[in-house]
Length: 94
Image 1 (cartoon, rainbow, N blue to C red):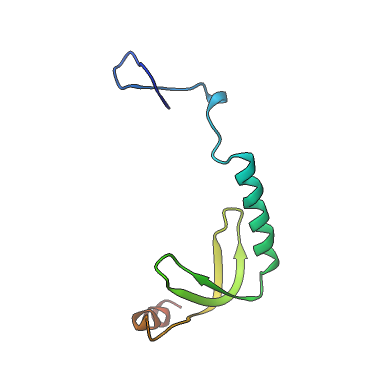
Image 2 (image 1 turned 45 degrees about the vertical axis):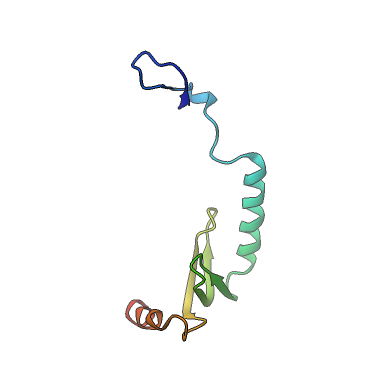
């Protein structure tokens, strides 16, 4: 959808299907594939993942997909003193 004049007054008009922008630009697709191939090489190795809230989780990289979603096995919290509640969550879930 793009801004413009629409007879129904919504201020939005549709672009024809073949003119809609793609989700990824060619450059971002290239970077995504570069990271994907890098992470695929790390499958089976122990890695540390740091989340946006500064929680660091260490585990064995089990898999990664083209959207860079990852699965870890044998996970543990790196700084258990900083996040003691996470230790109990890992015991309950995993």
